[in-house]
Every structure is written in C-alpha cells, then in structure tokens.
Length: 82
Image 1 (cartoon, rainbow, N blue to C red):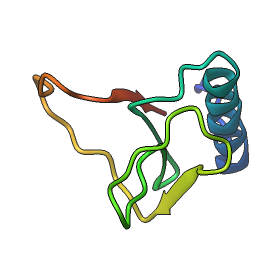
Image 2: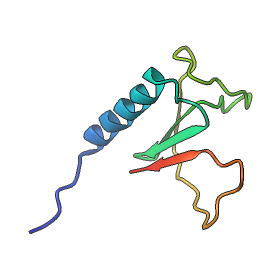
Image 3: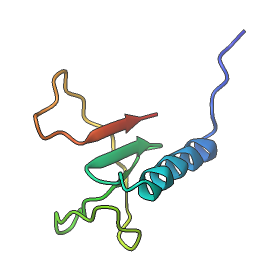
Image 4: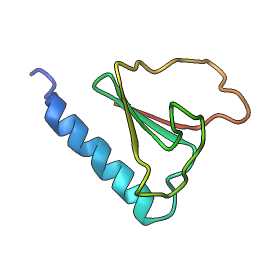
C-alpha cells in the first residue's frame, strides 16, 4: 500500500496552522517554515529586520528551498520542513 501524501493546499494549510499556533503562544521568533517552495519567516527579506510575534509583519517568500547543514550554526533559527 502506497503512502498517502498531502496536497500542496493541505501542506500550506498545515504551515499556516503551525504559524498561528506559534503566534498564539508567543513563540513566533527565529522560526522559518519551509513548504511548497515557500518560506514563512519573521525576518523582513528586504531590510533584514526581525518582527517577533507580530501579526502585522508576516513574511512569505516564494521560490525558496531550504538550505541543509549537518550541524547548524549556534544562532540557528528553528527549522520546520515538510
């Protein structure tokens, strides 16, 4: 029996749900969520300024693939991939 896979729409809905959970609990800081060649983050890609737990500044970047490091740097963000 083959594994069931989520559709791109369901994957995006899951990413939104995770981001909302983190926002509701004051945990939306230094987090990047990668999905469907997109990235949700709290860092403004144009200015480099971070907006923690700020619903007025939610960033979505398109055409993004997550980088991979065997050992993340000390100040690494939380990374959620799916």
